[in-house]
Each structure stands twice: as C-alpha cells, then as structure tokens.
Length: 196
Image 1 (cartoon, rainbow, N blue to C red):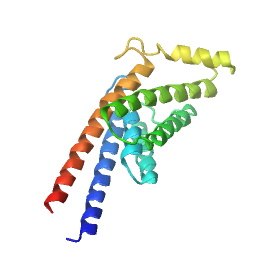
Image 2 (cartoon, rainbow, N blue to C red; image 1 turned 90 degrees about the vertical axis):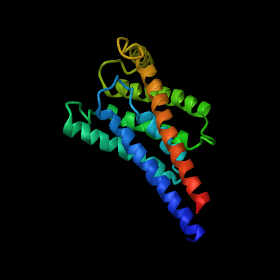
Image 3 (cartoon, rainbow, N blue to C red; image 1 turned 90 degrees about the horizontal axis):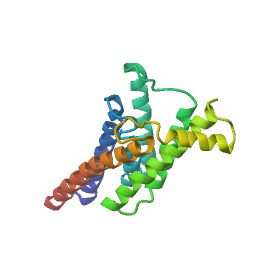
Image 4 (cartoon, rainbow, N blue to C red; image 1 turned 180 degrees about the vertical axis):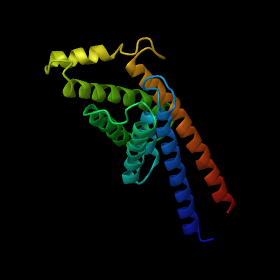
C-alpha cells in the first residue's frame, strides 16, 4: 500500500477515534453524577489539544455539548436549554478548547494543570453568566463578588465539597480516561504502521 494512503488512513482512524471519545464524553452528562462532575471540560481540553484540524477541534466538543443538551432536553427531566446563562457556559468551553490548542505536549503534568485551569475558567464564566443574566445580585462589582462568593460553597454537601472542586476533579478524572484511551489507540496505530 502506498505510504501516503497508509498515513491518511491512520490519520482518519485517529480522528474518528478522537471524535467517538468526545461524543462518548458528552454523554456522561446523561447519567447520574455529582454536580459538575462530568467529562465536558475534559472533552474541551482533549479536543483542543489532540485534534490537529483546529476547526474540527472546536466543532467536535461544542457539537457534542450541544447534542448532549438536546438529549437532556428531550429525554430527561433535566433542562438541556435553560436560558441566557447557557451562553456563558458555551463560551467557557470555547475558551478552554482554544487554550488547549496551545498545549505543546500531553504529559500527566500538563493535563493535570489543564484540569485545574479549565475548572477555574468554567467557574468564572458560568458564574459571570449567573450574575449578568439574573436578578439575584446587584449589577455592580460588589454584586459580582457576592455571586462568586455564593458559588464557592454552593454544593457543600456534595461529592468533593464545592462547585469548582467538582469541576476540577471531573476534568482530571475524565482527562485521564480520554487521554489514556487515545494514547492506547495512537500506539496501536503506530504499531500497525511499523508492521505495514
């Protein structure tokens, strides 16, 4: 088989594998889970850092997020579409995906650090949305501060103790699964290339 055709076939296989992993990650939202302990942040990190075609790197995680929102809306009691604050949530995942495109190497340390900063970005932008789109807080810096302060212990009786920590731990756990599975697929593809 021609080397160029072989390379294209392997690249296509890896892109399809990454896409399937991203879609599977999005559907973790449909199963019972602690608040914010899903694979959505990990999915954005993974898509941004692994998928070489940057348009596809954005399209896969955001499209999978939208698809999971549609499924939540249609097939569960959870609202998939819940108002203006959702725009801020999508913006957070676009920012996370964009920053992940700058990840030069995929080591345990860089992925763990990405789990932390992506959780922080989600916390900041999603709560900015709560402050901007609701009447719960005054439209002032003091109101914004009160919104962030209220969000820190928001899930105090839940899994890891609070809103941001759940996101970080979910991102770390699912990043390990996504990047681990993809690394295995990459190695398998590389071994097949060496045999061919």
